[in-house]
Length: 516
Image (cartoon, rainbow, N blue to C red):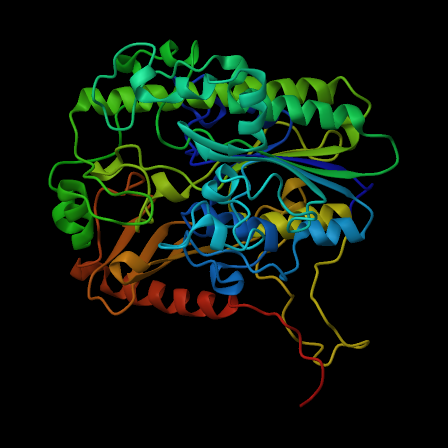
């Protein structure tokens, strides 16, 4: 139980790697404000998303359930409106809940062949076409437990929602400056990469921070709040604004984890996508490219992260200058990461390699969490919701339940666990393993992964191939041991462990109401 009823500011970025922070040991990138959160609290060195795609991962953050539980198995599947969320639970407990920026619990596009005038504006309330056609001017309220939302849809060159309306009113025509043909200097031809001509004062990261500061200024002592601050960056396209577009010389960025010939020892779709491309969730084009293009992409991504960091810092400044600071938990995470050239791949897709599934995870609560702690304990985004509710002293929303439990030995409602004992320094670990999953419908694949303290095993349902890595001996995952005869017993043992964990993390709701 929490010592007091805290506020929460939850910062989330889109597609940011765990190692794209100074506090994570990156020797080049400058993230003074993320480092400031880490110095004031706890940083997880081994936090994982449970699904490496935007919509499933965000649905897990809101519902505390796996993709199997909330059924957002992949991008393009809306989150069912009636599922209980942490926002619902906090609202019922008297919290003020507000979201700013990217939400992405419903699809950004309409189903093929469906026109805006035919579409349900509630079912497709985050859709680009619905906003642009004028059928929508705001998200429904409440929205998955958020009492109010200031919405920004899109990435880089294509925005809609409350943010886009603000830009169009503040500087008509300025959004055209986001386009690659309007770049500050001619693009080099690097994949999805250019220097955006949009002024920083009109950038979504600034608008999101401005709205977060305004929200903090409106809060009154006595009523706790939950503030969701969601930045669309550093998701591709890789198009930072000045001055961040020139902050990192491409020659200075470290090159990715890869080795010649490794694609011959990975599942066949790795090499096919790297060399020829193909439609998968998050990527269409081939990923092999000249090193100078990859260096530019990494440098531009660093710039986008530093831009987010600068504006996130403005929110921290406002918080720390207010009387709210001591009673406010600050959390920072990303929904998933980006391979950034690791293993000759870019962006995301049916790949459970660490560059894509390890995410930043920072927590701060002055006077309650110890300062400057770096933990190697396993954690995942599935633990986010139970941790928030535990710190708030709010029960997990279970839906209909009998007055007395019908089955006292039933498992807790959510598969994730509260990280509060670890965050307070009362425990060294809360997990022996983490499960990652996603269904790549475009390829007919179902991936299931087990991460333990030392190993990682990935199964492709119905396929003879897979992945097995010794993360202690091979931290960059350059040697796949799946077909190694000496690793056969290890593979069998991890497969059995994965089967148990899949059963244990299956959905536990709805609750049993009667014996029969």
